[in-house]
Image 1 (cartoon, rainbow, N blue to C red):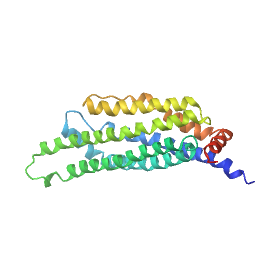
Image 2 (cartoon, rainbow, N blue to C red):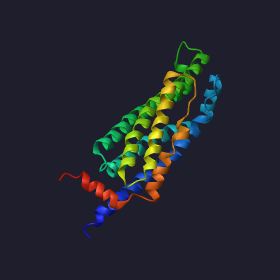
Image 3 (cartoon, rainbow, N blue to C red):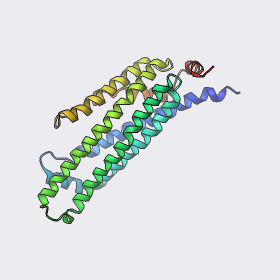
Image 4 (cartoon, rainbow, N blue to C red):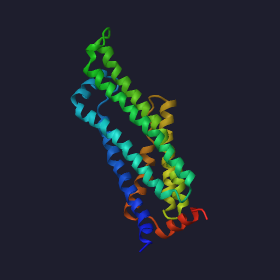
Length: 239
């Protein structure tokens, strides 16, 4: 009877991590959908009109972006508990990288609130024509995208130690670790290409994200190999 908690705990952590991680998929797709039709390249007036016409959707996309970061915190904590027996230092690095990206992404949404303030209180900006004020909106949206690229560096970096831990674990398939490391490279390519080649739309992460879908599915459906997890845990414990 005394062995039951130790045997159920890693499986429970796996299920929790998998469910929370999978929740990020629809939230992420909603965020992309909500913003995809708002910006009209080269037409600031049309962009402003789209924001005003879809303000509820625009505001909801801000809430979703912040909710994603809250879920990210819960995901990485569950994964830390699951993967720390493999290598505690790498597990800590995984947590640090993700947590560095969270405040960047959260504060970045202030720019979106700035967009809303601009379209609703344009009259308060004395000395600016309506055309000049409208031109500020796509500039702020571009600045928001730059903030996403900065956060994207850490969204990529945390996948490297996680991929390493999964690969080395023995209680999860090695291929999932490889896919996570590939996903890391995808985020980094997207972010740094945005810094170095402005206006050139690169979206490598759309093709390298499979590890972030397959890992949570595996955790939710299959869980971990309990015997190997407990062996890994025993080896990690000080004598």
